[in-house]
Length: 553
Ligand code: HEC
Ligand code: HEC
Ligand code: HEC
Ligand code: HEC
Image 1 (spheres, rainbow, N blue to C red):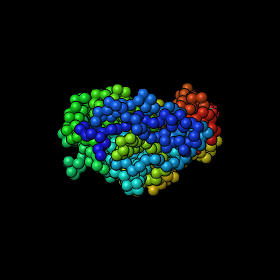
Image 2 (image 1 turned 30 degrees about the vertical axis):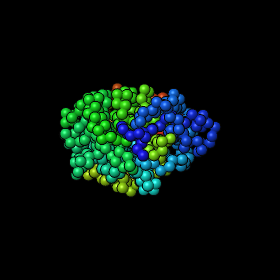
Image 3 (image 1 turned 90 degrees about the vertical axis):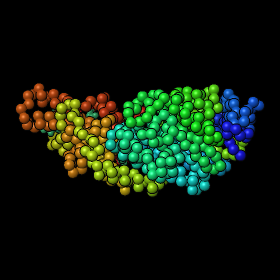
Image 4 (image 1 turned 45 degrees about the vertical axis):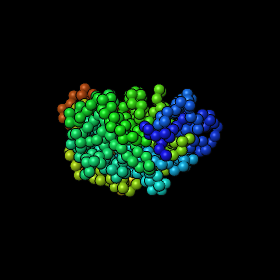
């Protein structure tokens, strides 16, 4: 039986969601019992009288409403997520195991939906494996579980945007990711605006496959060198699935790359839709690089797509697909940083043809060997190229002073030095050389790690200042998070206090003044490195005092 089809007589897809009762009681039931139900979108047996064959039946009012979960409900679905972002007691791990896909029969086909990786091929290494979500290594383990352990037919689709910066490192990352997606046998991958801001030769090299008929990267309105396809039709599990991608207006504006053939989103999509329609697919999926409102708008213009997978929305995707007002299209978010996978099951069951579950890539999923090797080879490439090979040039520090290293401060500020020596800041570079986790791979060649773990870099730009760290051997005094990461470069202060050079008393006083960091201004300095990703515990009320206590001097 076909599920959805332009001309089939059977295409009854989801009528209304029967989530009302589930939501109503999720607060009173123990989390472990109610959560599985919360994460599913199930259809009920209600069908409406005026259904057309091949059309999605109208949804009842409350179904549309229920498609947007209430804030409190998210908490019951993913306790660890909430603990991660709003820890209440500084210890952020709440491990509650639960079975995935409770109540699901084996689907005919499962869609595995990801996107917006934003450069996080591994989750940041800073918060401990238990707190991390995402990464290609866990993603592959999950995918293999579905394919191999459960024996499901999986179609893997990615909306796009693998990177978030540009330059050599981002290019290597894009290539690494493309390789990973190939190894994971993705079926279709959209282009995101950040992908297309990279050098097009590099993107092309990563995208091109030996078989020109089998290129997985696609877009209706961004074509690389007349080579990449606009759409694909995937046949598996007895279903024919038509997929295309689109970059909406705001995303297009971010690309100024004359080598990419860009066109208007609506015009581009019209063309793909005509071609896809002629293929008579069972299901049409649009991978949409756009904000939520852009995605809704384009879905209304092209109601033939039953699923629109959007790059829009917050880091944590909504628990359930939204039914776009005025259509029967479901909008599925992928979140950001590759932390979640959306799984859509398609069933040959007219009462329950489609289900959805949002899965957090947390430490239930161990690292896959294949992707771990990819990570190692990525770090190896960074090492081989070195900072200069990555195009990294030291920038002048706005103060005009140079970094001299903590040892230079020790003779005059002995007490402060002893406190610092005993703090974790004094081993921050060693942490990258011998990481406590995924320890087989050192990260001290990776600018995106170095920026906060050495002396004399700008954590916001991932670039060194002149006289800052350039290598373990090259700049031995610039290891670790030093005095100067907080107080600023000390060359002039040290020289003037030592009586080197001809400084006036005013200059000496000025340089000393410049070193001061009043406690009430210090938090902003900490936050440059202790950001939400790398130091979530720093973001709970009262955290600054606790952290400061550990290093007070
Ligand atoms: C040769 C001695 C000497 C060296 C080396 C030295 N300082 Fe100082 N530092 C001083 C003196 C003297 C003062 C002024 C103390 C005062 O006015 O109370 C001072 C003041 C400071 C202050 C301001 C303290 C306050 O009153 O708030 C800071 C911060 C500071 N130094 C940091 C550093 C750092 C960081 C280094 C290493 C890069 C360093 N100093 C190296 C001698 C030195
Ligand atoms: C240049 C980046 C940077 C700045 C600025 C910074 N830190 Fe850190 N901090 C780190 C890094 C990196 C670590 C982890 C070091 C390690 O263990 O490898 C760390 C660790 C710590 C720790 C140890 C936490 C633990 O898990 O035990 C404390 C406490 C701390 N920082 C306090 C502060 C405070 C307070 C400030 C601001 C006054 C601050 N830091 C500013 C980078 C920074
Ligand atoms: C934006 C700044 C920043 C960046 C970039 C960064 N870190 Fe960190 N890292 C920190 C801070 C701050 C801490 C301390 C967190 C805490 O204890 O609250 C930390 C802690 C760590 C720890 C834990 C150390 C311990 O003592 O347990 C590891 C491991 C680590 N980082 C590895 C990495 C790796 C690998 C990368 C690159 C992928 C990286 N970091 C990039 C700021 C950063
Ligand atoms: C993580 C940030 C950070 C690091 C690293 C750090 N300091 Fe400080 N330091 C501060 C802050 C914030 C204050 C202000 C404390 C206050 O006003 O109570 C301070 C105060 C000081 C003072 C003035 C203390 C006083 O009240 O007389 C001196 C001197 C000083 N630091 C020197 C150093 C030296 C030397 C090092 C390295 C060995 C160092 N600091 C490392 C943040 C830091």
